[in-house]
Image (cartoon, rainbow, N blue to C red; front, top):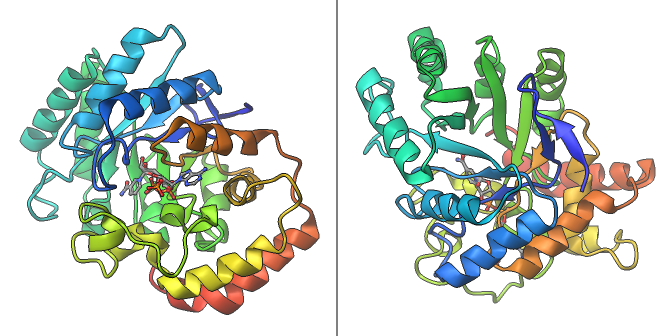
Length: 327
Ligand SMILES: NC(=O)c1ccc[n+]([C@@H]2O[C@H](COP(=O)([O-])OP(=O)(O)OC[C@H]3O[C@@H](n4cnc5c(N)ncnc54)[C@H](OP(=O)(O)O)[C@@H]3O)[C@@H](O)[C@H]2O)c1
């Protein structure tokens, strides 16, 4: 595993880290035993950074990570999120009172004295025009409840606005072969300001693993079943907002570029790591084998300029027209 600096935090994080949404909820059932084995495998593979949120499984994901931390001696940096407990996303919801409650609850579940990195969890765009929210986060850092804070965003424009606040240390954004726009304007800006970038949904919710088919089915409590059209949260979080069949066609084209003995998941993650601005990709996983497969991406050779151009062409022709203008 290779490590990269996360913005100005002084942390070096595993370039393939771990996203702990699926072991919490909304991805079908994952037993506690499987979830713990998956987390342990991540640490065995050199992962030192885990992304979670207070709402993943209503706190389950955070509790499992607390358990992991007690069972391991390695340093494990935990980034959590707050804001999605709100019944409706409003700027007013990001009040001092609410933030205090959410932070205190995460501290309890993670059994920590301070949160390593708290991210606002896709707040409404208008929140970035309210500096007092970021002022409150500064206060929580001064009080010692947070070491650092950052944001998780839906849109490139929100990312650009967020990094105007000088103490935003990280931006989490969807970035993968099917979501290339962040690399154009946002990445150079974030790099200049030394803001860390967490590439989320790096496998397009499993599409970019190459295992999905036209007739694949998903459990009733899996967002790939119930959020395909944005019924519960932003449609971009499910398959990166790409039409399923169109996504499968593009995956078939990408598969032709795979070097031998490289899995599609590894290839998709290696593509992300080709961008220096990215601090880490945070693929989710429900089983140890998935994590081991994904972590191998860090050891792969760089992709050639020709392959990068071909992936850009596939994106420009098949995917970009559906997603570019939205996020
Ligand atoms: N708003 C936000 O801030 C937000 C939103 C979304 C995600 N996130 C964060 O980003 C992380 C990653 O995104 P994501 O989990 O949505 O999607 P993802 O990483 O693109 O896809 C993860 C899913 O793909 C499958 N998978 C993973 N590795 C595989 C492998 N090697 N082979 C075969 N299948 C594999 C697993 O599901 P199956 O086995 O069921 O197919 C896994 O749960 C999340 O865990 C979360 O921490 C944040």
